Every structure is written in structure tokens, then in C-alpha cells.
Length: 65
Image (cartoon, rainbow, N blue to C red; front, top):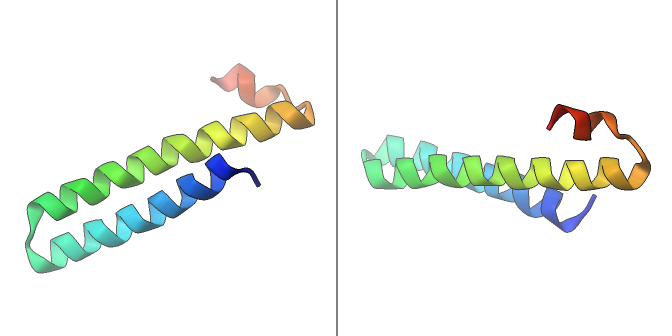
């Protein structure tokens, strides 16, 4: 697991928690920021996955991009 994967997964979790908290508290800006943070985390984790696949020689992931 590389740094991009770890940070991306943590951002996804944090974003989802922020999104749920915003929805529960009725704070739309918090909900939307959480949604955005989760999306950014997903992209970063996918980038880290692609790096790991490239290092291991698995080129199928690169063909999907």
C-alpha cells in the first residue's frame, strides 16, 4: 500500500463521515464538502492503485484508464 492509497482511503472515510454529519445536523455546506472530499479520496486511491499495478507489472488497470 502506498501513500496515495492510504491518504485516498482516509479521505473517503472522512468525507463520508462529514457528509453524514452534515445531513444529520442539517448543514448543507458540510454535507457537500464531505461529498467532495470523498470523491477526491476516491480519485487519489485509484491513482495509488494504478501505481501499484504498474509496479507489479499488471498492465490491465492501465488499459482501463
